[in-house]
Length: 154
Image (cartoon, rainbow, N blue to C red; front, side, top):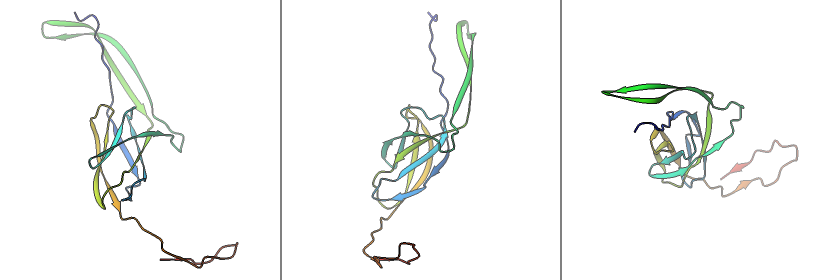
C-alpha cells in the first residue's frame, strides 16, 4: 500500500566563491569554498584525489539558514491516487563555508570538483598547483628593532 511513503528533499549545492585559486604542489593549502546547500559528507576532488571537506565558521557572521513548509496533498498518478504526498517548499538565505586541504600534486592546472554528500557533482572549477619555492639565504641576518631593514632572499 501507499500509506507510508517517505521522501527526503535535498537542495542543490551552489558554489559562490573559492579562495585561493592556487597552491603549492607539495600540498597542504587550505582551500575555502563559499556556497549554499553544503551538507555533511560534502567533498572536494582535486583531479582524481578526493579529500573530505570541513565546515568553517563564516568570518562575517552570516550563515546559511533554510526554512520551509510542508503540506499534505493527494497526488494522482494515472488511475491511482497516492494519498498524503508531501509537497515541500524550501528557501535558503545566506551561505556556508567549507574548507578542503589540497593534496600534493604535479605542477599545473587541475579540475577542482565539489561533490554533494550523495556523490553528485555540484561544481567544476580550476585549481593551479604552483612549484614550491625554497629560501637558501637571507641577508642581512640582523637589523634594528624598529624595522626598516631591506632583506634580500636567494
